[in-house]
Length: 88
Image (tube, rainbow, N blue to C red; front, side, top):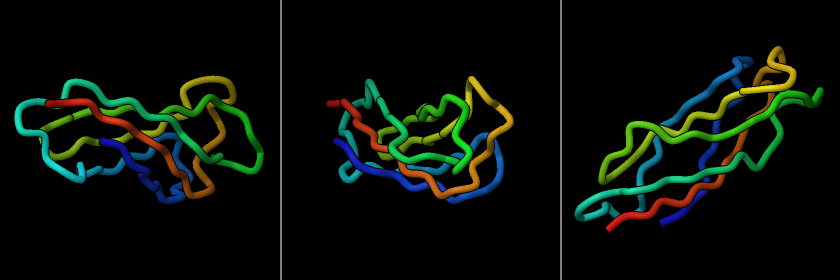
């Protein structure tokens, strides 16, 4: 399964939101990957990444972080990330 998730502009260095799978996995969700697809600030800087946590058969928590470079740059623009989940 795959999709796009949006994050509100918060002026924080880390933002998270719950993502529901379009269809629940019947047995297990074994892997989720994601990549941020929009910039967080007009100033640039930082290394932005999406990390999935708290995965279940029906959803996961997507977090985007400024995890390197200029860590003083916060999310002053709304964000998007694309994700893919593998399960059975």
